[in-house]
Length: 346
Image (cartoon, rainbow, N blue to C red; front, top):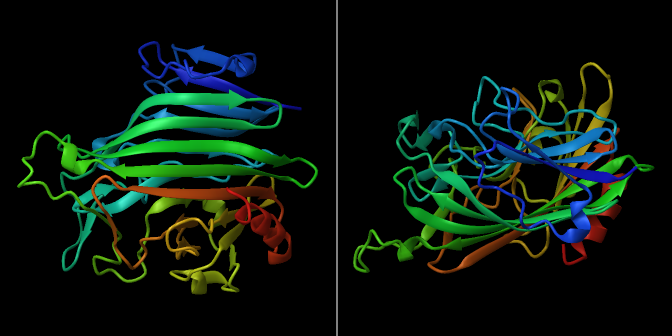
């Protein structure tokens, strides 16, 4: 068994994989339009382990502006083939698998849907920003590992360029015998707001403030950052953390890792996702946004109840690992894997 990568793109896509190195070329399959109706207009990378699609990363999505267009991972599956993500659920159409988000970036919304305003609740405004794919710097895949480095721009709905991002996604931990693989996600977010040509130096307000609905006044709603939305069958799943929190008590609490265990319709299987924070990150261990009902979700919420000011020209670097495992894992099984990765450079 080995990893293979497929590039899915319409004929018109600007996302050509010129960054694939020669060693990886033999493991790359290119699928260019025409596509199925569900795929039309998107560009994506799809990583497979033998017959199982581990993930599809849609890097050029086709979605309404009100959903804050951005890359996302969906579907994501365990090595056993069980689906652990949800896509565009009716209650929150902007929830899409796993995606990098910021709900409150100054007065802009890079999360999707309405924006929380204290005293008004959620209001649909013309402030839904986008994350634009610019290029792939590198893509590598071999029998047991994958890595890719992507350049993106964060653009407000008014067309203002606020953030340059370098994003790295990787799979270098995959153990069929132990029944898990791990998705590594790192990002470097650079504030470029004050270099935008639309403003004079006197008009520029260059610091970007990263917050959440909780920093805006809504209790226990500190979502943002790298966010996961689970399948419907994961409702009322089990939550534990490295700090000993269980269930709803984990909401807003700091911990080096958080794990969510749920059950699958159809197969009847159980799966566990372990979300690992890294000691090099801002505000480690971060606070967690997590829900078990009315739906399963979790996010690395460093901005849960405290605004972070990203100064002009500064870069915020974050790295995370999500362990995707078959079976119900307890703390004793998660802790050694988490400790080993957290002791490394990430």
